[in-house]
Image (cartoon, rainbow, N blue to C red; front, top):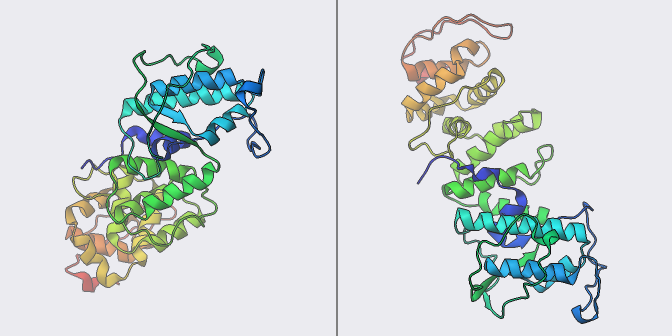
Length: 344
């Protein structure tokens, strides 16, 4: 299994919901559209509706060619849209369906409705306002089995449900799911972390979340990271994620440079861990920690984080070098350490 996060992390929340749940987010000029009071008129009685029955029929035809069909609720919601909003929704939906077909099958999430077999929906009325710049991928026959697209009535709640499902998985996430997790995290607020569970069972997944929090290391984020780190290996996994990995320590990537503020944050987290287990944990991945020490410069901050600096000295089994201290740094020459009992 690959240990790097693929570029699918650039997907939009709407694309993610389409792929994982087969749900459609409407494109509307109103940020909070009110569809409850809209009753889609019967086609036989409608001459010029809000978005036009003809436009919805064109969309149905294009979707059928791609193997999709609208649920009744989604069709009714589309009929309630104005012409501009319908055109925007249709153009984006067709483009997303084409991208989905090009990038491979969606992960099985259990949210799909049963595929149905039925007559081909009307595909006349070649309305460019609906089709936009997305031509039909082909003019072959419509697939006999169509997957059902459903209306996303509460996109925020659906995104949170998908996020919680991924955070609750006990094992290493496949690279595609790890990429989706990054999209889902970005769709949630940083200032209020009430949506984030206290416990994340998979350590690799926890590392993805903690690394995301440290992208904007305010007081709330740092406190949550400190509370979430149980072992030194958790910090090592954070460094791996920052370097493009999924948090797995197998075939880890070359560690990326760590900015000074983040060095201090991670060293402070290490410094708070119980000293009796800190060195033992680091020695389990000695080579990785030697490389991490080259990025964190623990001897530079030995005056502020003595336990962490001494642990690194033990792992290296050498005397920490003299350094030129900055205004908030202390120049320290650590004694040659022989074991964990030398930690203060």
